[in-house]
Image 1 (tube, one colour):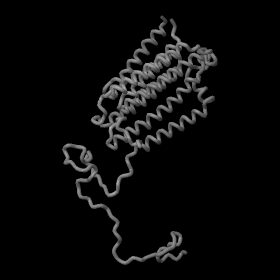
Image 2 (cartoon, helix red, strand yellow):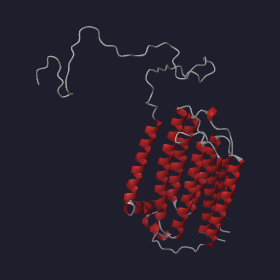
Image 3 (cartoon, helix red, strand yellow):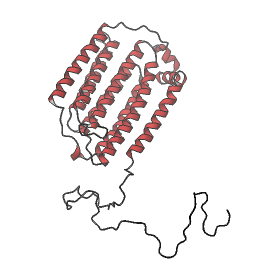
Image 4 (cartoon, chains in turn red, brown):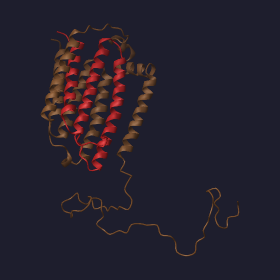
Length: 101
Length: 236
């Protein structure tokens, strides 16, 4: 039995689904951020696996761009958490309602 | 059983365990520590896939930069305000389990039934070696084929940093005629202080009001700002 692309695809699917269940079940916005980062990493494993399979480098380059976007996203998101805590509000997704109505 | 497969099994098992830890740990700091473990194992999987540059970047960017950012944010947030450990309402939990199971079955079916792709690209292992390594190959493709996307990514990063600074700045829209005094904690936030309306100063500070100067004043009547002349100005 050899290591094939399918192994990596299964593992990345499992990682993605664990992250997705974290986003769906947790209330703390910081945990939700971490789970989103895990989902990005899972997508990166898939991209690198297909790049390995097709002997191209484009998948790896694509993950570099995904990494840049994820870094910008986490910077903005954590700034939102800091701004929320400055206003004395909890980082709780069930209680965030500034954009409601 | 090849060595690669054994390494793959070890790394992926550690990665998934740490990922479950991120979701299941009660303390956010413990979750962040589990996330470090998960990402280091992701980097190991990248090495198995021959993507050494991505592995290094995963460690530097995620476990080096983003995790430090997350830890600092955890320390800035008041721990008493953190939502209690609460893995969703029962409905939420059941729906997420069902959705996750369905998605796993779907993706598994897609992976099992898919046809392996052909070797269409030029970057075989021998070719990458002859280019000098994975970093050189990635750099060459990124800065030639994807040069425009590279520039746009740098623009996205600068916009993100500026946005983070703007969002993180202290609130500038303070209501007029309110004054705060630095006691280390705002009034009403501590049990040691007398209860009172928040942001109200315990000291009696007179509101700063504009008062007209006393004495004689000249009244200047003009039709618009351009026609305005200081008394005694003869230039116009």
